[in-house]
Image 1 (cartoon, chains in turn green, red, brown):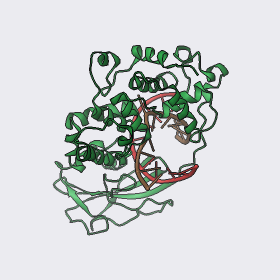
Image 2 (cartoon, rainbow, N blue to C red):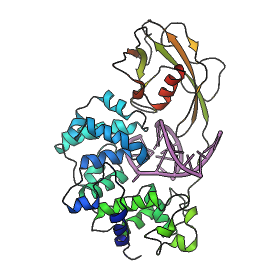
Image 3 (cartoon, rainbow, N blue to C red):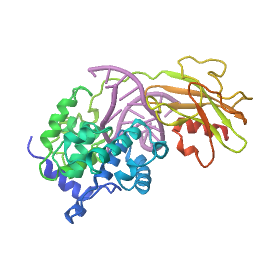
Image 4 (tube, rainbow, N blue to C red):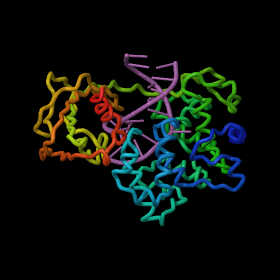
Length: 351
DNA sequence: TATACGTGGGC
DNA sequence: TGCCCAAGTAT
């Protein structure tokens, strides 16, 4: 296929959407260089996450930690609390590891090198290519969900994902230009986000409408094909919310691995596949517990969860258990520091 | 290659 | 309402 990048770059010059982390083409022509820290932070936040959800988090992070060195020096708990609600919490743990590695191993500056970027925690093939191209204008092809869809359509590729990824990557690399690779990367992702959408693609206004094989053949709306997903099981559990007379709450720091790793949470039972009649697990303090009316329903990536919430007003000290919990005062903790499922449990106690 | 890993919005 | 989807990475 001929070089299609010019049509897309011309489209991007006019239609580039403003985003807090983005350096638009006009600013670049005026000599403004993208800030690699801002590009990196935004790309990590944008992994499997919408622009609408990321924007407020990005603004808060850059306000609080303006440079990668500032972030590297932050307390773990502060970063996890600031990330709370955004999901995929391994990203936040790796964000800190990466910031500290950039300071310790690269003198506080992101390396302008794809292979070196790929070695850093939380930076995989997509993010390394995005940083290389957007921050450093190196010609590396990005392949995210948008680009997969755009490539599948213009080449009318019917192999289902994820098996089609190597094929789609070959196409993406073939189209990536040596000139303005950063603008091109953002342009092809913008195209997928705004015109070449999953449903009802706007082929009538697409700058790549003419060469697009799927548009010619009428297959665009059904591409890309995907292998079927497995059904989500329903799991059940109980959380225990202990409220001290001074307003402090009993919370535990979850282990660094696994679901909600590194985040604060209410002590409670394991989450199991069977529903029991009674609350499960062991209360974290010996006290009078009452069941909160209602239940928490929450869906994770691979299962549905139904939580029973138990509440107690007590000044008992927590029992020493496998997961040590401690009281956190009002100045140490706010509900916005919690991952969403735990915040839902908290909210249930206030209704 | 397959699975674990969050959340909120759109239809 | 329930399913699909969103600028993926680690294991």
